[in-house]
Image (tube, rainbow, N blue to C red; front, top):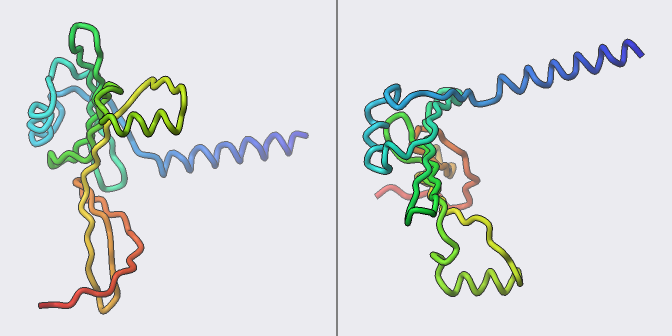
Length: 165
């Protein structure tokens, strides 16, 4: 019984310590600790006094900042925003709660047709910015997605190589 307990403890230690190595590091920071390019983007995108949380997220060689806000509209509606900005000030992701009735009528009809009697609790608009890059290296097709912070995500390429002009 003791060996099973010891083995379980070792397994848990290995599992959690390994997870810490692969996990993003996230720390709360004040607005003044943001790089100037990120501060500019934040101030161009949202109202500073509505910011509720700022996190610096380090993932391998990349750093990004997540800023969350709550904004009151019409003295009652709270609009939550979540924006992720690369260290160079480029917006990577912008998510914002929107009222259900902001959807086009056709989309609301389709939702209600598929889910009769639905009561929508939350609707969020999400924009993610990236570049899809297609190319050829030594006659082999390559395709990848490059995010504003410089991170690259490989994508399976099924297109013919581009010809140089």
